Image (cartoon, rainbow, N blue to C red; front, side):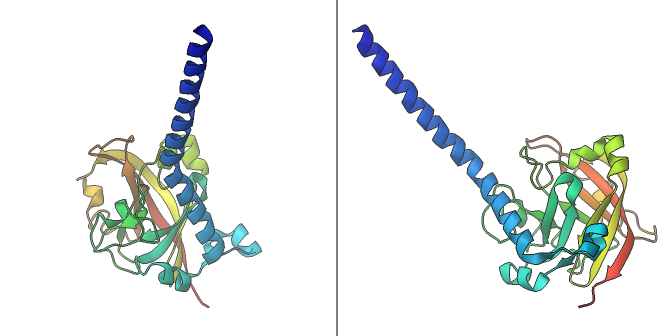
Amino acid sequence: MTDRIRKILAGALLLLGVVSAILAYGEHKPFKEAKVKQQAVIQTVVAETEESVEDPLERRIDFETLLKINPDIIGWLYAPQIGVDDPILKGENDTEYLSRGFDGSYSPLGSVFTWAHTDEKLSDQHLCLFGHNMMSGQIFGRLDRFEDTGFQKANRKMYLYTPERSKELEVESVFTCRKDDGVFQDDWGKGSGYQTVTLATCTGYNSTPYRLTVNCRVVREKLVLY
């Protein structure tokens, strides 16, 4: 009887292990798929040269191909220090790309996106970009690294690309605020004389009214000539 009970328990534990593995795979599958898609689109549309390695402003993004993937893609954000190298989406409303990947398919990770009323050339004096704070570090999951003063000083640059222009951004300020804060209004920073880009994500991983914001100014830009 004892051996039989042991065999039953061993079988139950084995079954539990298999079920747990299946559930774990199902939970992490969307994150893996999103990573694969991100790497695939980077390899397809980002042209790296010796010149662009030295100066990321010289990177070239194939927007013609991106628009075939999804006409809602209006730009590209590159912040290698936090693992961001992604298309920027603009939907028909302000929440569409909270749950859609850059190709328009459902994704719990969502995308990097902007307000539905944002100018398609991303030329507004104040531009807001949003993304989920993913525990995996994807999308804006590592944005909180900028809260560390040392990290911020050593990693101030990021880059924004459109079909017409490449822009170098420099981090100016980092703070946490409510989602209805003035920083999310179009006239924030009005009269500064330069374009401001605000990156924002939720604080923590649960629903919260608070947002971590990283505010940058455009310090250099270049017309894209093909």
